[in-house]
Every structure is written in structure tokens, then in C-alpha cells.
Image 1 (cartoon, rainbow, N blue to C red):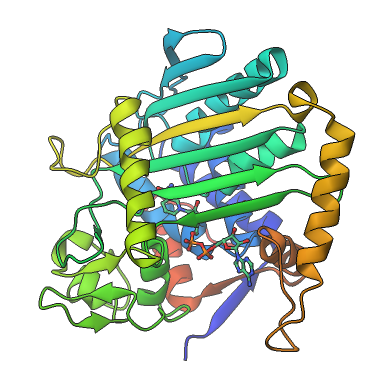
Image 2 (image 1 turned 180 degrees about the vertical axis):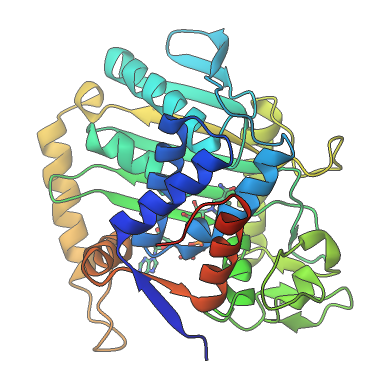
Length: 359
Ligand code: NAD
């Protein structure tokens, strides 16, 4: 059983900011990345939270993440935009890209934005929440170039990335945000499990002989309790979620976020070690589309009806997408961010290597 430390969100955010600064990120970028990572922990997505810090620091040192980058415009069609992130910190360039797309959607009613060559941009729901806060609907297809981890339906070899898909719908009572990896679990959840955190569901992984597994070693090979995890060392794969349907959605994420935007796909890599997110986002303004108040009323009443469904388990009410994250955020802002001891030791080891004292 893993034991956890609980760290107040503000303290953790300050610590991670100092680590990223010491690693060479400019102050505003360190603060933005740290805020996003702690935000993912607060939302309950520990896989996309501060557990990533040691890897980000390694990637930055190796030049795979580049500080000081701003998105550059490749194509500007008014209602559509293609932007290049130049391998900048993903949370920084994807935020810039999202802000540009939102401005266009406010102007034209809709915007299709492609972002290529972003470093790891983290929890995609963050960008949907950003749009929802401005009253915009958003749909995001994301892929991960250089990260082939997922076996397609019917296969035992890696072909897809964990390619996340996300939709956010703004409502007056809070947004509905569907945000998930198209793999049965996000790779970060394998990382968390390997660090003593929440165990993987049965059959999340598949071995080369087709045997189903929940052991992180299927993905990482043998590893020490504290230290790096390298998916290149494992022989197995994560399975795509939802059988042929989830596998098909992963395929579409690669085609739209990778091939269409000009970002690398999860296919054979030309540049080893560099993890690149591509994203195709569609932003829609309900105000331009029709009667915004009528949309809100219809959506709210539908949401209430769905949530009123009698639960199979009386202790687990039916939730709307995004509700779990809102609940976790409210809890963790009070109780602190829970981190497995091993994950916390890994982060402190990274801090120590950069001369940053731990809180
Ligand atoms: P997950 O399996 O926890 O699913 C999350 C989604 O399911 C959310 O929309 C949540 O509100 C909803 N949900 C959860 N419990 C629910 C319940 N009881 N009832 C109704 N809805 C419920 O998420 P995941 O697949 O592990 O993905 C985790 C995160 O990883 C996501 O934020 C994703 O964006 C991120 N990710 C990022 C990358 C990248 O390359 N940047 C790659 C993969 C995943």
C-alpha cells in the first residue's frame, strides 16, 4: 500500500516553479507550467500533474523542450489558423494558441485552430476550461508524436499515442468537460502506478504474447523504486479504450492533430526522445450560433435529467463529465495535493540536483 504526503497546492506550485526556474525556464513560463501541473493534480489527474517534473527537467536539458518560444503563424485564414509551437513549453504555447483561437471565435463565431510542434501540453481539459470561462464551446483532438505506446484494436504492437480527446461546453452552473486519453489509461497513470500510486485497472496493458496485464513493467520493463521510467524499455503496450470505437478515435486524433496540422504522428520517429503534441481545436460561440440563453436552458435541463438517473450503486450518483474534477478540486484545495512518497522523492531528487531546497 503506497503512503502519501499531502502538500498545500500553493506551496507545491511555488516549489515546482523554483525547480523549473533553476532548470532554466523564464519566470513567466515556469509559473505557467507549474500552475497547470498543480491544476491537473487539483483536478484529480495526478498523471498530468507534478509527477511529470523530473521528465520535463530532463527534456528541457536535452533541448526537447525549448524555453522562450511563442507560437508562430503558419496560415491565417480568419476563421482558421495554423500555428507552430516551436517545441516551446506546451502549457505556454498551447495557452497562447488557445487565446488566439478564442479571440477569433468571438470575432467570427467559430475558429478551427491547428497547433503543431508543441512540447507536452499537459491536461487538455485546461484548454477547454479556458474556453468555457469565456462562454465558448471547444473540441480538441490531440496526438503525441514520438510517443508510440498504444496497441490498436486487435493488435499487440504499439501504433498509437495516448492521443487525448476533449470537449468543453460552458453552462451557467459550471462547464461540462469531457477529457480523456484514447488509451485505456493515460501513460501518466502507468507512471503514477509505477511510483506506488493508484493501481492500474485489470487488462489496461497487453504483453507481446497477447496476455492482458496491469503491471507497469509491461510498459517500462524493470525499474528501481525511485528513478526514471522509460517506456522504450518495456515490450508491451497500453490498450486502446472502447475496443474498435476508441481505437478508431485514436486513429482520428493522429490524422487530425498530427497529419493535418503537420505535427509528427506516433509513427516511426525521426528525432529520438522528443515528445511533440499536435492539437486541432474547434471553438464555437453559442452567442453567434443561435440563442445562447435557450441553449443554456435546454442544456441545463438535459444535464439535470441525466444526473437524476437512479444510480446502480446508491453511493455513486450519476455524474456529468467534468463533475469529478470539480469535486476533487474542491477537496484538494482544502486537504492539499496527495502525492505518493515515491513520486515526491523523485521530485525532491530533481530539485536537489538543481540546488533547490524542498519545502
Ligand atoms: P479518465 O479516464 O480519468 O477520464 C476522465 C473523463 O471522464 C473526464 O471527462 C471525467 O469528468 C470523466 N469521468 C470520470 N469519472 C466519471 C464518472 N464517474 N462519471 C462520469 N464521468 C466521469 O482520464 P484519462 O484518460 O486518464 O486522461 C487523464 C488526462 O490525461 C486528461 O486530462 C488528458 O487530457 C490527459 N492526457 C494528455 C495527453 C497529452 O499528450 N498531453 C495524453 C493523454 C492524456
